[in-house]
Image (cartoon, rainbow, N blue to C red):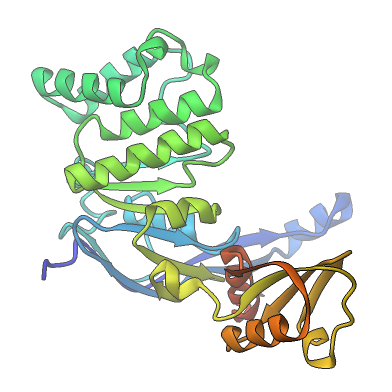
Length: 329
């Protein structure tokens, strides 16, 4: 088995935030006696990622996803713990480290706002010191794969969000990194742009063996792209497994009755909603027995069984996680 490419052990990151009461009086009081609140963005996070994995890193806003990405990319220094990426300490070995990674932040761009896209690409080539022939080969391949031909002479400020994200993806891969960190790359994208982004990232992972760590709120992205999922909330890792591990054992059974039906107590207890003859049940287990009892007792027009939406299961995991809110100090 290959050695892990990314190793994180007991990672912690604390932020000290100044607080003040609102208004002029609050501002004056804060000058005399300033109060601080310590926020634990990460608390004892540990995981390892092997070469070639495509891992989804999910959690609600403020869970610690972006903080983790910034530490892994060398932007932030952790308060405690150990982190190594391809054998390097990201924040201590930044020059060598950034040469081997690509990073895309969905709400920020690494392109120059007033320059045409192609000039931003050329500047990045100089920054990463990519040999001219290699750069032209990789650039042309990325332009073709991401359909950027019509955008190369357009200033970045004139691009739509979807167009800019495709250009940012290309920019992050011009130096052919082995590792790609994607921090909410599909945020705000339309369906067509989102599908193009997914297909491109999956192709990079499959054909080039690029290791990808993806943070997202979109569970469709996770289900479509990721073989492994890590779930974080309040700075603590709650789950590290597969998409199937996120699925609840409960099933949603939708029944369309063939005429009026009076539900018995056992069936009524599992009722979620009812609209005319269409009834939705949530069954905690033994779904075959439930279906058999329904079909034996009532006349049915249709019946379907499905997993609960994965978003509901994830939301329940979030809600059960302990709250590690910062305390005033």
